[in-house]
Length: 91
Image 1 (tube, rainbow, N blue to C red):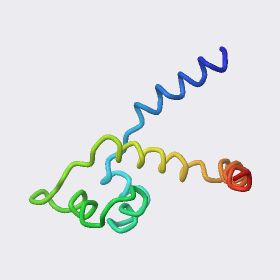
Image 2 (cartoon, helix red, strand yellow):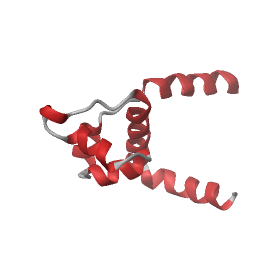
Image 3 (tube, rainbow, N blue to C red):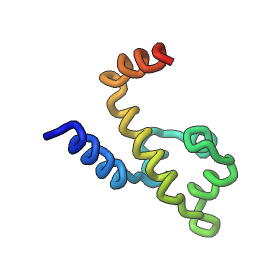
Image 4 (tube, rainbow, N blue to C red):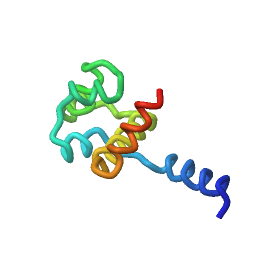
């Protein structure tokens, strides 16, 4: 498989990566304030994502993708951390 094909395959997988705020919050035991920081949005919005049915809002696909990617990073932190350190140093 060529590098271009590998890159295309990864980009296609990225489009499929989605995770709801409720699933992310439950899995990582975090609340609306941390969700807001991860997604770069207001605490009010994430509060409504996690609130009861009466005030629940739905997170859009871009935010579900951010949460899925964050879940991937957290789930693979031991293997990814050395790579992130090298990436950060290269800035």
